[in-house]
Length: 271
Image 1: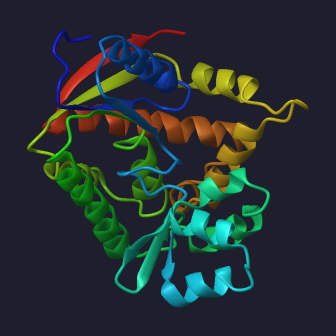
Image 2: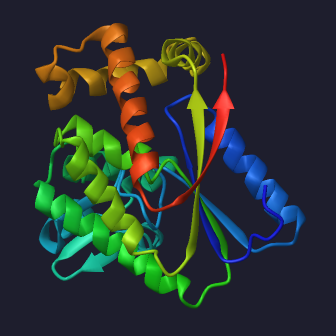
């Protein structure tokens, strides 16, 4: 790790199971030990750069979902998460699944998910860029060091590859446009390279299970593989199809690292 870490934005990337969370936690702990002001964000959580597990709907649709809720506390909790964009509402609905009182509302909002092909490419790109520009403006007056796990490659590539099936040049241009919004800041990519995609996926399918032994991560990944237009077009199915997709994802990562204007530090993980 570097000796001077002021005013930096760190992106931690690698395929699922590579060790992003462990590296993020270690970096966070090191920075905190140095008394730095640091925040950490993971994909699929409330996040200033990510759109995964966010719902995007009209004010009318949002009002319809909240209709019948009498509790001021619940309404306040939900409204505190909302970002209003004209006549549209953007909300990280997964944050509502933590409470029994709002769990059903989160399920209703999931039908307005930004991901999984629900938006046109143009709308998705514009919404994504707007979020990054807003964060860039916030950082102008911030002395924070910020760590992002899986939001530069992993989260957007699920949509860019899986649902939009973009070619590599368009994908590079898309991620480069996101990084352009942060050009005024020192951004660093920590990338964890794995030597065996199959072994990594086998390990996380075995490890990420419920208390009753159900493979919740594998089931979710397979649902995505079977519904993604990219995988359907190539007849990727089952565990073998999952391995093929993430092997391609790793290839895309490697090309992005070579082409993007960002300082990159690679970590090798051999299984």
